[in-house]
Length: 245
Image (tube, rainbow, N blue to C red; front, side, top):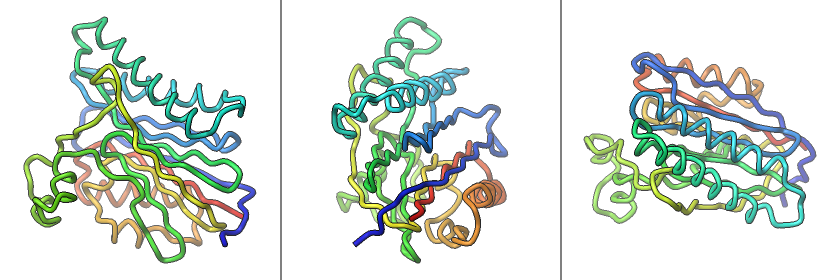
């Protein structure tokens, strides 16, 4: 049985990368409230930056202010829906912002259990001991083709359609997030990240960098530096949460 977790430590880093003119990623977290969020915006001009910031701000506002009268999952689903409405409404009021959107991946911790929720292709992972596993499923055209058996993983890596996502916050009037319930054990390390990390580093390379002896802040810097060294073709955001007994 998992050890009861009484405390978490967390750190995050976001970086423009080496090729993009601006950083359209955003993150937010509250260790006290057990809420951790990473978003990767998209859209012309500053639209992606606006979308990701709106998503983080709205999600954090609603989830850190919850009164506990409803389940954590219900509150999380409502927060995602509210963030979607906020972005969609803002885009409809400005021609320059039409079509803007953002991914979202969040970790929500309460009483030794957790939920991961996601929309888009920003990912959530868990490392337990030497086992590193992706918890979320990418909402992308290519990954859905892989899951259906229409493409191999090797073919997916070479596809020119890798950037096409099939679900995002703000692009439609409503959206549905995937949700994954997890047990937490002392020593578990959770990673939330934008695709600027996972496009540059394989899961094996990421896992090799996650030295359990190092604090989350140092691990975030290692991941950022490795992604930039590998090319830095996109914005890079890493948020790490370590569960402690």
